[in-house]
Length: 288
Length: 309
Image 1 (cartoon, helix red, strand yellow):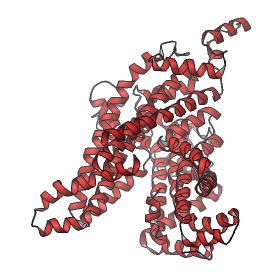
Image 2 (cartoon, helix red, strand yellow):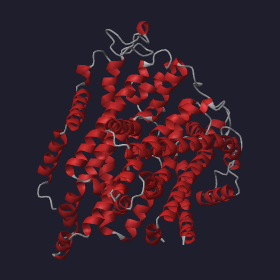
Image 3 (cartoon, rainbow over the protein chains, first blue to last red):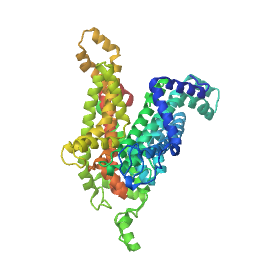
Image 4 (cartoon, chains in turn red, green):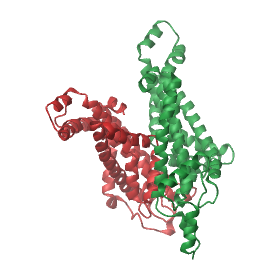
């Protein structure tokens, strides 16, 4: 099936993903979360960095709904601001990873030969390694911080996007309409951009959407190791890292950011599942 | 046939491990910071520094350094830890058993419990159990490992006092780490087993078996299980790498000795030889895992042998 207008197609299937009950709840939550992240400074009840040592490790209650941490900072405000860090780092990382992976995968799948073999050898090498190990090595090379966390996540998921895109392109190249276009004498760039990519892109976008969830977990893990966001920048992982020392005294400092990570990732997965169903691409995801 | 396939797979490992070893060797040289700086006393002269650099062989050509390094590796000679000032081989030998025990138990736990749960949910067609399973699988594949570890510590160690908070004393110190790593694995294996069994049930030969009047139990264990085992074994073999990755986090949270916690500590101290040895061991484990998975697959499914060899 050649897609005339990718835009209309995407709108249609996103609409269909929202149509089911699960899709509506998960998608609605994600939209809400993005809004909370954007408007964090106006929504958060307190300044996320304001310390109040007189009120340190306060249990959840009024006015600190989710309690305070070891410096007396409001946990709710920090979770709200943390959404900003976690979502933007993961989304940026996945966007970079997806762009690079699509380019590499498309080029490998289209041109084949030595280039394809070289790319796929490297990709298969990193593919068998756990994402946390790849990210750890990368962060170790360029040092801790949010920028290196972003690139570490991008590199950790690069193999996934490259493999998936290549698999789509290789499959599509055998289709009659592509052979016809080639025989009509179209330029490679025209074939790739106008005919192959629009048909290959749907599964890649869905996997990208799901990967944002994985990226949030990876960002939280790096933050937990103290390699991500540096204080006082609030991130869900970094909050849990500093909370470990007070685990017995004020467990809420660890519980609530973790709940935020878990709910977000679950919502991403549920909505991603609905998208896969709406686009009807489950079979195409299996190949890679 | 299967021997020939195994032989070819082993041959393919040579270029792969060569490239991995080069990457590991190079990556470590890209790391910022210089361990020699950590060793020098305040007020040391440039000569002291040059002498130390020469002693660790850091002044030679990179290619020469690589071949010296890889040659030593083959002899089990991992060099001297620069910061910890002990033979790396000792450090690895000391930490490896902890990681192997943890990883092995977590592997066993996730395969046994995962396959049981997956089989149960495939044959017992109960909507409530189905919902529970889907929820469990979703949780298991999304919740961050370190957070789960902290919650388990909070609940079982602090509130109930059943297991120690950290350390690697007796068997009871292993329960929570194994549960943490195993949780995600259980969910994954359960899902794959379930899907594989449901797929297999739809095959024509199963209908034939039912028509022949075989009991459901016989069909399940004699015919469906071997059929469904293939994807499960694949996932389990790939899981070896992920279990090792999980072990890095879990060892860190529980303060257990092991390759993972050794690696994190060495990364922080820029202790090149230790980082290299840890990464090599982990890479080796991942490669062996995929090898075992591929060979097991080929042994069970002649179609794969034909296609790949």
